[in-house]
Structures are given as structure tokens and as C-alpha cells.
Amino acid sequence: MAEAAAMRAVLEAPGVKGLEVHRLPCDDATNDKDAVTGLIRRIVVTADPPVKSAFSVLNLGEVVELFAAWRRGLKGVPPYYAVKCNTNPALLGALAALGAGFDCASPAEMDAVLALGVTADRIIYANPCKPEAHIEHAARVGVDLTTFDSVEEVDKLRRFHPRCRLLLRLKVPDAGDAARWDLGTKYGARQEEVAPLLRAAQSAGLAVSGVAFHVGSAVSRVGVYDAAVEAARAVFDAAAARGMPPMRILDIGGGFMAGAASTFQDACDVINSALTRHFGDVPGLQVIGEPGRYFAETPFTLAARVFGKRARGEVREYWIDDGFYGTLCCVHVENYVPRPVPVSSRAAAGDDEGGESDETHPSTVFGPTCDSLDVVVKGYHLPELRIGDWLVFHEVGAYTTVLSCNFNGFSASDMKTYVAYTYYSV
Image (cartoon, rainbow, N blue to C red):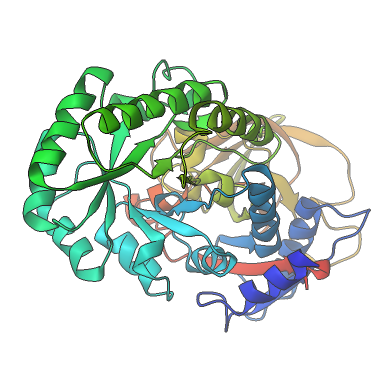
């Protein structure tokens, strides 16, 4: 089956090949989250030497399934993964093996992708405002497609990368409340700025190959895609009216979600309808997307170790070795709602999940730093835990470790990632 062939390609991909890859059971009685939790339990009980610090698990089978769902939902629209969302080499390598392109915003992101054998023509430099030295780097490594939204950027590109093809980054109409994060507050040309930008690029002798937009991160109101596609068509028409060479690329950006709160299929329906309605008469149109969290969020799971405890009446307070300044920054930055799953570090029968008792206590979970804001969850009912037990957090792959820092000397950057896949995938 196609997924099995895709999984085989992933397992041989740079960034994955050579790693120990754990197999996960997949049957009617075991869902992906339960299977990953079971793997974590085996790791913390049987690893030699024992695991003593937080780690993550990447389920490559989930990545393969997400890629297949993307291809079904947006036929003919290749995904250019937004590297900024999660830079894990195994994730990047898996997506490269599946045929994804990459949305890079800096030389470091370009180099990370190129190091995996990805060719420069599979990269879009999707940063509308770039330092001059970064533009020169893109020219050196052969990345020849980028976005812009200002006259000043046109001048920089003329001087430092004149062969680069441009996509005019458009501010999406009425996108303010459509997504968790409105990217239009920083980037995107307004309607009245389109003509001057086209004129500037034409005067500079630069090729404007199409239009890009981004409706925002984590879209909940998917109708905004229709308005964005319609606005993009107006730019295509404006360029044609100026006698510019026909545009051929439409970059629909990101904002897509997977998981329980997913609006992905609804977004696909809106986009496909909008493309037919607004671009059905444009020959040779190439549509691309820039998904980030869609591929990164759900395949990653965090396991954090309990290293401190305090009882105050019925309330239990625990300290774990990840928190606000680490992977679990998503609790505050991404509005992630933690539902930690307890896992015992002891192998004795009946001792898993906090012991034999079904009693739970309202619990507060703190991160490791001395900052009083470093709180993961309050009032969450957990069984009695002991130092050395673990808490498991699912779906923590998007904008987590990439936003972590070394406050108080605690770092998530050297956290180990275990790689896994499901039995039926190969």
C-alpha cells in the first residue's frame, strides 16, 4: 500500500537513517496516543542506563498519515513545510523523503534543509524582509524564490540577488480574528500598495512570479481563505494590466491544523472551491502551501520527570524538568491545554499510573526554574505521584522547543528524541 512505501522511504531518509526507530503497535484496541504512552512507559522502566531527564517521542507514522491526508485534501498543492515550527532533523528528513518542499526564513534554516540533500529549488525563502547578508546567502546556495511586501525590499533584491523570482506577499482582508495569531500585523501589502510594488519590481527588472499570503497561524474561521484567494487574483490581474509576464505561482501560506481541533478538511473545501472560482481560467497555475503546525504538532509527545513534590492538605504540588521556558512554553504562548498522563517509573505489577489506588488529588505542576510564572497546570486531578515518576504531554510539537531558552541554566535544546513508527506502516 502507498503508506507502506512512504514509510519505507522515510526510514531510509537522511535525518532518520541510522537512528534507532521503535515500533508502535496499531490495532483496534490501541490508538496512537496510547501506543506512544506505552513506549514511554517501557523506556522509563527498562532503559539502561536509566533515563533521568525529559525527552520527546516523534511518531513518524503520524507524519506519513498527515502527508497522505494533505495530498487527498489539496490535490496538486505541494506542501512547503515551515521549518521555523519545529527543526527536528528526523521530521525534516521524513518530510523531504515524502516529497515536501520547505519554507525557510533564514540561512540557518536553508542550510539545515540543504544538509539533508534537499535541492534549492524545493525551498522558498518566505521572509518578506531580509538582512542583506541573508539575501546574499540565498543567492550563493541557489534559493531563487522569495517573498516581498515593500519597495525597499525590491531594491535590496535588485542589488544582492537580481535573478531571484518574487512573490508579492499580500495582507489578507479581514483576517484579524480568523486565526490564533494574525500575521498581517507585521507582513503583507495592502491593496493600495500593490500597484506601486509591481511598478517597483518591473522598473528593477525583477520577475514577479506570483502572489503569497498567510491567513494566520492556527485558523479557526476557514472562510478567510476564500477572501485571500480572491484578493490574490486581483493582483494577478493588476500585473497583467501592466503588461508584466503572466504570474504562475500562488502561495496559500499556512494556518492548517491537525488533531482534535482540526479544521483541515473544512479549509481544503473552501480553498479548492475558491481556486476553481477565482483561478479556474489561469493556465499552468502552480499552487503551493506553507503548513507548519499541521505536520509538527500532533506527531510529538513530551515525557517530563517529576523531581520535586510537596503536599498541602489535599493539594499536591509537583516539579517537573520541563516548563514555561522549555517545550511547555506552548501552555502560555500557544494556549495549549495540558492534560498530563501519569506514568510510573516502577515496573512492579499494579504500580503503574501512580499505584493501586484510584484516588486523585487536585494538583499543581511547576516547571524547573525559579520563576513563579513557570506553572504548567493548576487544579488538575492526578493520582499520587512520587519523585521519579513521569508526566506525558501529547501533541506538543508546534512552536515548542524552537521557542525554548536557557533561563536559569535549564535547556531543552539537548533533549533526546526517540523516533517511532506503527507496525502496519511497513
